Image (tube, rainbow, N blue to C red):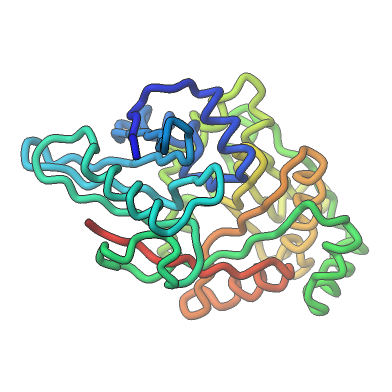
Amino acid sequence: MKILWDSFAQSDWDAAHGRTSGALQQDWAYGATMRLLGVPVLRALIEQDGSPIGLAQFIVRSFGPLGSLSLCSRGPIWLQDVSAADKASASRALRQSLPRSGLKFVLITPEEAGQSGEHGLRAWRRVMSGYATVLIDLQAQAETLRAALDGKWRNRLVSAEASELQVHRIGTNPGQYRWLLDQEEAQRQTKGLAGLPLGFYEPYIGSRQQPAQCVLSLRADVGRERVAAMMFLIHGQAATYQVGWSNDQGRELNAHNLLLWRAMLELQSRGVRRLDLGGVNTVRSAGLARFKIGTGGQVLQLAGTYLA
């Protein structure tokens, strides 16, 4: 098992990440944006017998000469079928070769379900329970996607489609979507929500020559009034729901059902194969969890976060 650190092209990483519908946290542009925000990032190519078998992107928190904490979130990305034993060897090699001085604490949150040990981290200490999300397979036909919707969810969508709501695409220039980030900031303050730094979005969206490759934002209006909006970040052949806002009228008209459905169709037309709806917490945010689960997507409980 051989680890090559920061020694390959972005185009190669992007191609591999796209083929596997990798998570946002393993997207090259995600790491590049974190670097712009002052966060150290390390990227590794995992080779076995001279052939690439995986990629791993780490976000690093440095403690000066004392050491560092490096997190591989929702990775590594495996480029082929890899046994648990080989994954264990790769994890050991990643930790041992990590190019940091002092004490090295390494965290891995594998993009795998359950606690079967197939992720190759049995020898590591599980320090955090598994993150739960909802994944929608956009390779299905639109009719199949609609049939998979929960009955009440679909009824709300039908009601929204028959209402005075008008859906518009929000442009990719910062001035066109900044108002939505302002609404997100207000929500975080009033509701105690967490998420990516709000300064992340502009450089991430601007990281490609064609910003529309990185983002889809939709707005629902009644007349000239904005009543709801959603933002999705696109990374290769996958997308992740990031920001959602609605006022009272938007909620009354089920605007988010309409926006999410339209987003699913639009992302599908752009060649996106998988939509990640983000965290599901049935205790703290039961209503939001029901909304996401009602799409008929797969509820995925990840294995957790492991420390070595």
